[in-house]
Image (cartoon, rainbow, N blue to C red; front, side):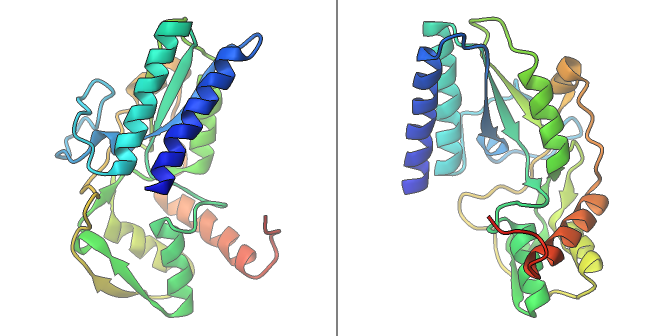
Length: 232
């Protein structure tokens, strides 16, 4: 709960800072694919026009609240804003609690990984370089005042959790020890970004496949763990 509370307070603080900043032009902030909640996987992906009234977790609810606060600030104060709904970002310098990162560490250590949802979950993995391209593209194209917007930013190609693990095993050269577990509360079975709106605005086109992205991550991860890459 402390993290979610800090998220809300932090976003409000940023909005207030923007409201009082001279020559303010455009705020680009991080939302999340989690706002879509649990929904069936379709061929078209999750659209920004889909309803987002049933978040599955408190984290998702706070991200939705951030979007609502931003929309209100835009209406009240004319702050041009773009909220980016990130879809499963991965790559070097990622969060150690993310599945791909913690799996890599445990696999190399010979520890058992816990595979939730019996391995049947699907995620729209998005490599960090593609995320950066999308963020910069949006930053350079602010909406008109009074037109706060949200945009999906994802890979546009959902892949199964077991596929991700198999590719990670291949890149690491080690077979994982698995413990299959049920779906945890607050998680969702699938995510899939419809990125057509972002593409129309910026020309966004994800370039890095999951195969290539995990290979790049493992190369970085080995250097990082062996001290060849500086730690923060």
